[in-house]
Image: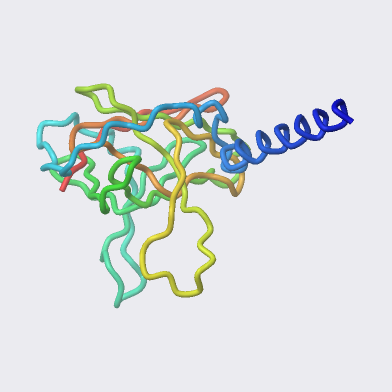
Length: 200
């Protein structure tokens, strides 16, 4: 009876471990990221610096918004090789800039829809950091919210790196503070780096 009881406990522990790591695996992130300590997030976002490195304009694409009653009038995205990132990017004096949402435990979020370019199989690995402090950018996604009409934004999950696969990629990118940043994308046979400024 004691042996049978222990075997049941071992099976339950194994199931608990599987469910503990499955969200990271389902998002295509490195499962070791769940063990990372949460980032140190500034209490206030701060002002975006104006001295960040200029961006390679070949990686920045724009088109006029075809929806006349929606903002912004110009849609901007970054794209190079196998990966594209769609968000509220904007250009200021040849510098790529990005705003923020409200503070979370992972940082200040911005919706960036990372996806593979048509014809690319991936996977693409994403990492990013603050150019002055070295603090990492985190990548994540919202967790399912079962409430039919949630009154507040739902919970999110994030990791300090991301892996983009077909139809699977993070939709939120988190920054610990205002500053100059760089995002690096790497895939078999290629990659790119994009510097930008971020802040309130």
